[in-house]
Image (cartoon, rainbow, N blue to C red):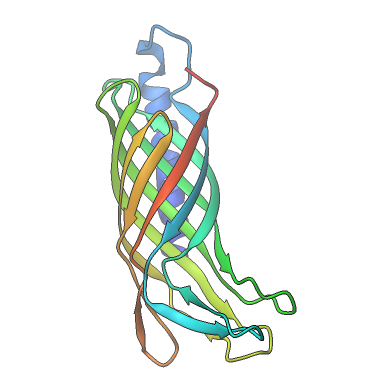
Length: 195
């Protein structure tokens, strides 16, 4: 957790310092820092649990699977307008269709990426993602699991805010069992105010 806090603090300080250093050289009076909202849906990873229902149906909970929302900041390098840095923190979870139990896998994703604007709408991104507080809750119907924090590379190809993402990561539980949390997904990224 300290590493992520330090990373976010350093990112914020760098964003602020660059803004102060280069702010006078920008002809437009726009800030290089903008608020960032991010949402995503991802699939993939190893099976963490299998849930059986009374109707004979079953459902898998997979390590990379889930929906996420996050907030953070975008920093546009004033001297290289096509280079952007994104830093976000949020919440990612997946649940099951069970009506009588709240079975879920949740985690807190923190992500920092460097992004290159190939055109005004086409963006390539690469960076690092960290998942903290990774917990599987069976709501009394099975064994709860806690996982160690995990980190891995993440990549994105986006057009006009809608992107295709890939993250490579491995979760490890308290018994040292490892689960692939590799995930492919769709993302929506919105930076405010508009430029």
